[in-house]
Length: 531
Figure 1 (cartoon, rainbow, N blue to C red):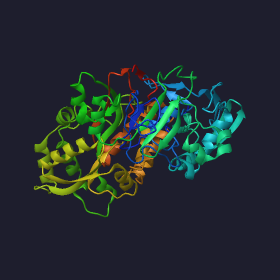
Figure 2 (figure 1 turned 90 degrees about the horizontal axis):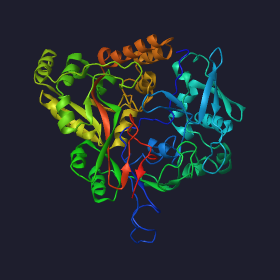
Figure 3 (figure 1 turned 60 degrees about the vertical axis):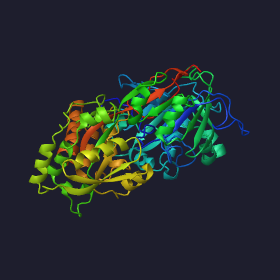
Figure 4 (figure 1 turned 180 degrees about the vertical axis):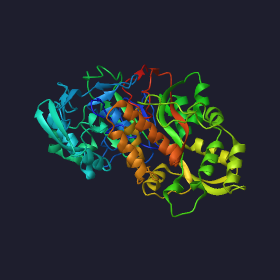
């Protein structure tokens, strides 16, 4: 959309499904002992959870570009940010941009005085190097095809100016109103030590640097700067450790006993937190969507009741969204009918489907299934599990007998990627992740590992392209609304169920913490520790 300035943080804000990890502030060695088998002295700890098997590691080493976003948020930085309140773009490592008349390239003007963890100054050479590496599939995996499609080349104009050229034929697309943004890495240092050594202890520009880690076990950070260019003297603590603690009950117990200072709280534990006078609960709202996807619709050669729109409507009407959201998920899941988050450009409210089991049974009978039918419901055994189990129980009440297919999160994701799921199941898309512009969210329907039904659908591709080619805001908004209707109404391969708000809790050693809104994984630099 020509003339519209937009900043995309897709290079960092990857919506990673099913993350379970723990983050801790500490005064020294990895948790468990003082380095010689003796108990550790009291330490300031903070907790947050991520993926139990793949969240604490990347394509190589612990590269923040391809590991959990929880790693990137502590160590890495990009060119532009989005204001957490207004969602308006704000300068970060870059201070401005300027297009040529034909809008075939954009000049990026960089902030001076930014240093990497090793003391090197950040310059345009580092930015070009960072973009160039995003086309290498061996370094960044699935990001490479996206960068190859949109960005032709990057040129250095001077020490603090780079020029990004768009791939021929992509001029005028909203994507180019700001390019995909990688984390910025140090060219000279990486050329000296190599990618693999760098990825073991990444040197970047963020407020923390990594000193030690073990894949899917822990990451040990220390404060990188006495005075950071953006964060000033934050964080107000010295060291940070990320641990993998998959069991929610274990995290809660550690939080209650004071072993952990803060944690992500799954819905089932919200009442435990609220009833404990030593714990404070805080929320990040509108992080991602909880939808049901009809996997069978991606397998047209196999017969399935789910092809019938009456059956799919019956599925939706069988779910008591409000009761489950309030009484089972304790307010962390809010009934929703819209594809976009309220902070998204062009958001419009759509009424969620009501709970009407009688109408659901009538539709099933009309569709030829008076006694219901058998299917399956797949979901990862993570924070989505409690909701999935409640949905399966609701479906059984109208005769839809869904086999409970609970999978380890990585297995669930791999089966999505290779189109191996059948029946129906949970889906996190749209994964809003704080993203403001609709095509940044809708692109997941085509490019995400989880896009089993939609990635090869020509109508979904065309809907995406209409957003990219819109000439003005009105046309763009109409394209976004049409995409929403296509997914939920026309094709109907998904139904909206809940908007997910992420709960966190902290104990008496934390003075205050307000999580970033719209994202589940958090940067922890602003936590105020008081010991």
